[in-house]
Image (cartoon, rainbow, N blue to C red; front, side):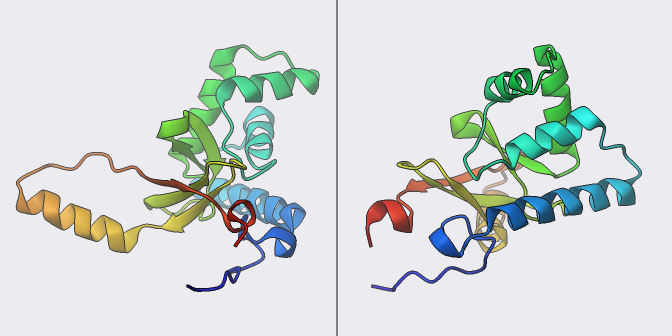
Length: 166
């Protein structure tokens, strides 16, 4: 069995090695850069929703975002949050975790890609991994069977290092 070695300080499962303030700051700066490059506007409400998504590495649902915005003193209607999330998804700044009906920040903002998510069933944290090798196998097999692949969601549920006690 391999011992756990964090891949970087941006690894949410890295326990004490993870600097979430830096992670959050880097994600927001990258999002602003990506929006600037694409010529789209990261409005204050879009930015605040993104900040709330990046508040932790736990996937967050739209209604939890609404509740947090209310704590902030804002009272947006649900469609406002859904439009902000739709924009963030379109720009590749967040991902939707289908099985949880929730959102997480994208660790590769502005880059079009598919991801695999490791989701800890105990603490709820999620980590994005590059899914290119797995995606290629699935795409090849789909084509071999004459299947027109339109959407691919890869989610793995288990226990992170901290929660498994290993």
